[in-house]
Image 1 (cartoon, rainbow, N blue to C red):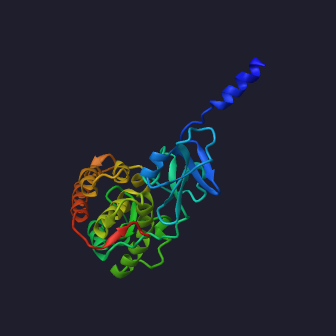
Image 2 (image 1 turned 90 degrees about the horizontal axis):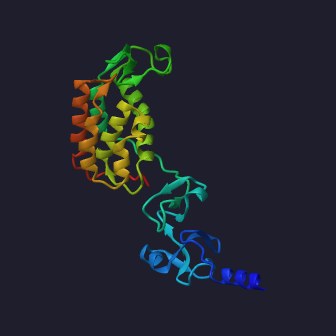
Image 3 (image 1 turned 45 degrees about the vertical axis):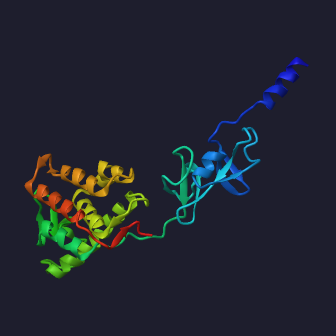
Length: 263
């Protein structure tokens, strides 16, 4: 009898932990105080967090473009955005699978890149010994056999090759930067120029990208972070110092053309 009373009391006074997952009908949510939920723009649904106090209810929220706040491990698309949902950092805006394509850089960006890469009509080692051709195309096979033009290249052919190559770097810059970050065409172009030079892997792991995604001022971040990328083979190269300075200047040049987010 005593044990039965103890069990009943335990059940009666049990309280589920805040921030537990819940489902209101078919909509995923989080057990959260009604005050916290409403202040974040969410909707509280009673009866779906039965072990919690009455002021803790299942909080749901629509977010982004067609997104729903839910725990990241249940986001099937893997396309998440931070800063839009209440609760812990693992409760994120889950967006539909993105059909957006990264925008092409401006002609001014192409001109900037061409100016620093220089034109090479036939495969030749770059300043650190890597075989390149055209405007900075890094050879992937012997004698750049993957290039769909005969050597020596014309400048028009090299420009076409460069624009094709840039698609990879446009995509990695656009995908690495959170949708909450707004960049104009010059800011985006400067980052694509940098990515083309240092590679997508370095971009993704950079402090520059993490600071942008944390919401810091883009112009400040670019001015402080881009100049750090001035070495090749462990040595500071004046050409890279000059390139980074030009990219910062281009980044900070006003533009009325929006680039990111792409959609």
